Image (cartoon, rainbow, N blue to C red):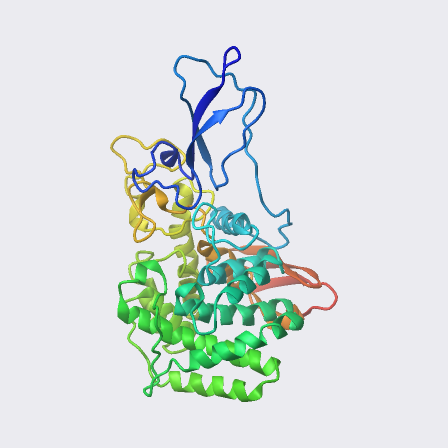
Length: 471
């Protein structure tokens, strides 16, 4: 400010250029989760720090019209966990390489004091969101304390008589993640800490099965795009019950509670007597196929219908897994290219809370001012709780392709807890070669696959001492 006068500025943060150009209340712009629009008094001599939010773009307006503002510097502070990317993925398709890294970066940004859903919104721990995030962490960073810290945070705030985050499926995801995390880390001491909560939670879950073998859960939710299809939700929850109780049974055996393990297995058998309708839902088809309630080919046919229309950023991970279960690796790769690749073409550097492939039609890029005659993809789209500029453009549950490419294309599968035994089964689809690394408690495994002229795949693996490789 000229002379010895102070000044006032208005600062607007955004995940798109459009967001910084709008006021609170316009096109869904909000200060509800992180303050992204505020007026500040600048000190006469000194600095002012603001902006506890996630953003890519900033607009600064000087509000004192009869004065001049002389700025020495504007700095952006990057708050993140300074951890190495131990896992890697590289192939002959640069778009897939970029998608893998974008998913990894999306989750990395959300690894704050806890594992958040989104860096701008909600900045909370949601157990269902955590499953794709934890899967990505496994393949990119290896074991990280943010995972058990976040699992325990919600556990300690949720009585056994309630559902985690108020959603029944999110308690099921907690059980599934506990099984996955033990398989990844082999940390028996941590698993033993869960007994007092795990056993009664399994009791409660098993009580949610009726005499016909049908789940009867309350607070019913899979993901937002399927939230109005009650038949699809039933199909998905039935499958998740099987998945979670199968996982719970495994954990009970490890924890030497064989009576509870047997009861979990009996409950799974009872659930398998009731096969719900798919209800034309890709979400339900994916989970039913993964739980082996329907044939893999049946699930793949539903998911492949109309390409990536009706895909979901969250459940897209399970759709890819179900396609792989049916052997449709090339179809899954094409879905990744088209669906997640479309976000990159619109200027994304992280993956979004939701995405509809129809949004690409006549859309402006998010890193440019919306053009006249074109659609503002951030301000004009979105649905449910993420309409318009409230929509999170850095959401960890959208990172599924990162985990999927490592597990299905690079082909890394954990056979024994703590990665003591790994099975390497590559599926290159239409790719010519792929190479990468996978972090284990013993060190990093280096893997390379090359497709030969006869179609066979040549594989080389370099594993640290303590890790047995099975092909």
